[in-house]
Image (cartoon, rainbow, N blue to C red; front, side):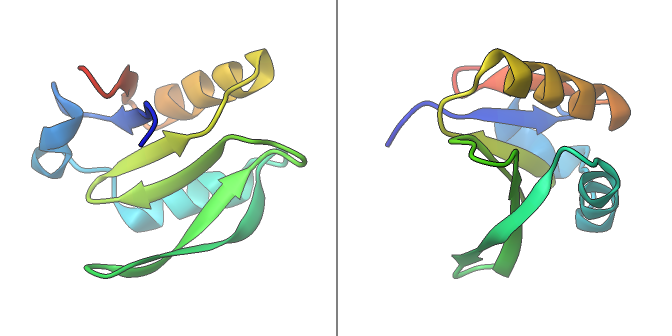
Length: 99
């Protein structure tokens, strides 16, 4: 498993359900961003299928789970800027696995 980043409102991403980003809030924001494209779905046993978003021809993906947005894959400078702007729009922050 690789290192992931998370967009969260919580102090620690593992506590995201304490200050959650709602699925509807995330999907509304993702759908409003022209740069983000729906790239299919990820199937979680506990919450079912969730849309995955990313830039065209991107290796990084953004998906919602348990009150946060998980960011996986290698991020280019453009993707870093996008992740930070998404976090700001959600009044959240971008943190790594160790935060």
